[in-house]
Length: 275
Image (cartoon, rainbow, N blue to C red; front, side, top):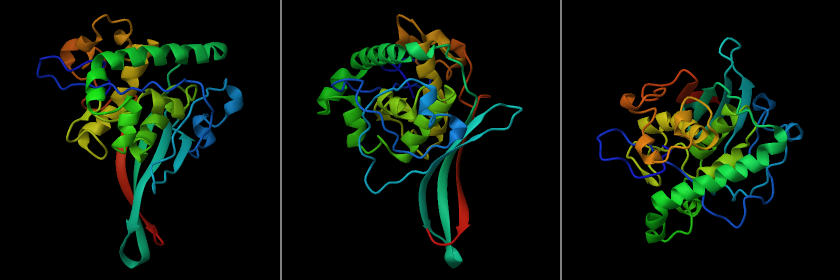
């Protein structure tokens, strides 16, 4: 989960940051390697300014199918679904596993013409936070960036990373594309402390379900001052608020037992025909 520093000495479950590592620039080329339906509005590039970035080739031999649709009107949630695998089942069937996330969009209040400058600002602040928290560990592990570290352990671009990034995009109503979120948070959607992931902190672990929601809202609160964890923005000692949303003593909406704005499901379904 998102966190800008090592966990405090208290026995509170730690939240963790993910971060993007400094590449040459945050403005490279724009491409959308995942199929996203109009339900998330992220495929409608003409409705928002171009946000250019470079997304590495997907993890080898791994494919993701992402679909979007409007959620039920009464809760105004948007849904994304990412397939995580398929195996042959009995009698000519196949078993498909998936991550499905339904989330209520937030209005960040960012004018389209100011989006790129806001993303650049947030990216720079995130890099500074992560350098302070993980710079020494990162270099000791032989990596030049957290993105490089995430790529090395196979998480960057994995189905769960894609699901988290698509959900983060849906949380912003599609204003910030999923590819940007992947670079911004190379470990987004995992629970632990930065790149140091807890035993159940990566898909399909129990803690990773919490992180899918908490990481997104932690980032939005810290770097955009939006959402239930907006108390994080401008905090001088943000490490003291790392568990915001996890420790009831710190205030803010809680995520440990789910959150009203988020429905995160790790499931499987049986289909006719082979995988």
